Length: 369
Image (cartoon, rainbow, N blue to C red; front, side, top):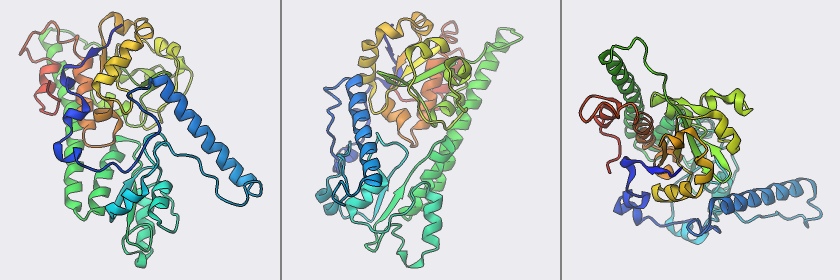
């Protein structure tokens, strides 16, 4: 039941961050020390903050008189350091409304900036339409001071690719965004073709009439309580030539899931056992490889009940770097899925025999040891 550290990810997130990025100033705080807090305690703190925010919103809507007519404020999970933000003097601010747990909301950012005129941040397309219809907006997308607040809310891999263009256009380099989008989608397509061709070659070499079924993969975005991977994660698994375990067994675990873009959902360990994945990836949101390996060992009693664990098919991954962040490294994350999922198929092939692992490694985007 002990998770194995994927060979491709033996370095933590912090060591993989370029030196110039390490010098970037942090403009948000947090009331949770993730290094001293286990996943169950973090989950409880997040849910408590969300409940307080919901209660405050309901009170603000229905009981303004009781509140003295003023705004009701609940401490954010990530309070913005307003003085530091003002000193940074940004012209473009990137934020998100996709997840209330990951970062401050668009409204919080606009409030901290003192940007007037609340606008819908549901999608960048809607934001662009509003800007186009408001010629005196100054290109700021949010106020008279010229600060443009861009909310990125991708749900699928295609949405993620579109955000590259959105960011590049906001920064005045649209061609870079288009090129990154093409490269990202090309890498994903190339991965799928590579896995398919490698499996077909092996089937032909072994003179098999039918290839074995694709591995069923479960990516756990959290362990206590367990959450499955949502939004773009099922599509990453599919691009790696695999089947998302919980999507495949949605009727068994008791809730409907589309193939792609559905939000991550809290499940139970009974759901996990019922889905009977061939491969389990522990890639908790916000945590690097070492933390996920540690937490997977802490969940050994539950993981040990899975066939995947008994067969040595549980892997810890850098969830923060390659799965949780909607950016270019999702392509490498999909390659990591393939590297782990087809590990057993290549065991009998030997080094240099042209199996899936060798083929995926040849793509050049799998993180090195």
